[in-house]
Length: 521
Image (cartoon, rainbow, N blue to C red; front, side, top):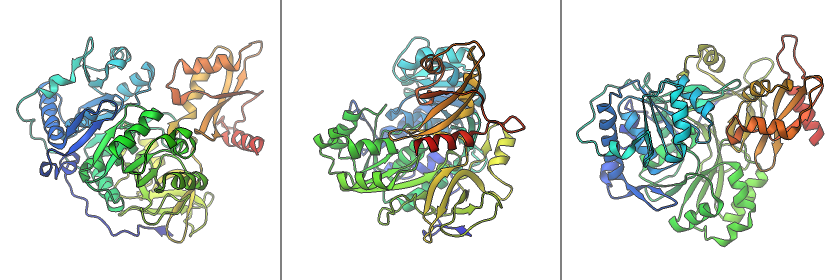
């Protein structure tokens, strides 16, 4: 059985992303587009579109051209959107990098993506210079000023028009975020102009977002959720986005109160904060109308608690980096707690039996398969991983286990894939296992997700110590923390005699997961 959208199909224009997002911006040049939450610094739509033109011209003058890649290694700032769309308008590729990355992680993405330029902030310049020295980066730009980097303001002073470029919207990549897919190490997800324009159209058909709305950009723009559903959908609709460089509880609440934020895109840990923390009572949050949760399942209890406390709609959405991201969004006026909603327009979903690989009907669990114009072009330089994720009929195998009810609402209940979702961030067990095996006292290791009330899941490592060696849990956790960004840190260690493996040597993580669940129960 194939589940489709209750909404009518949308027409997806064959135009480049930047042209589509700012199609109507000239009508309201003085309207605030992006506001820096901590300082109140504002970019109007007129300043935003002029900045995109100027930066595109400046990059072109430096030899940046269609098909080239610029890496953005920065927290959320209003100028993030200028840089992103300047690159996009030239037919270039944005590879967006987690601001928490270590030098090693940053260098790996720069190398794999083939980035030639790097844009960052002063606080990250030391890391950026180190990573650039290990890769093919020709020039570093910085928001502000810093030694060894070109100020972003120099690009904003560029005169003239950027060169005319021809963009093949279905083939030309506009953004290259990194995802672990269903397993393994992070891979570059090739998303085209058509993919992102399609998802902007699809999301806008379900979301009742207007130019009167004010949103908060607390979810990072480097992640496809924040990039598409906050930054691009909002700018297309003429709304205002107040950016935050990181989640600070009191500042977050102050911004909602001061800017009268109406809609928010969040993840379950922030919903938990809003539902439970006493600090919330000190602020007037009555402007809030709709909260959308994504990136990880939201429990019915937490959804109900947040909705009751804030007196607003709390709903869910579902998607993946590989689907640009949204495939399911709950309409504001028909929320089913615990459900991610029905398909967005032009999208198909089927639930497939894990053993027979045959589609099943309503209310029957299986793997979630997805098909639509938002499905990625593939993984960069990795045809094998692409083929294992998207089959010859165009169905993307999500690795998530769920079911659809008779209305087509999707409920995600488990995961086939091995990824750990820590506060909505992807953590690949294989990456941590490879790192653990470099420790001189460890002979074998396996990493699994452990349920956690606040984080959703935490990385837990099962470790086999070499004969005669003596090492503590704290020492191992410190070792890992020195090499990875905070969300990837191992939070718990259990020493065991042997890691369960198949005859071919593959780690049988399900055995360890079942053991952990039995212990928790």
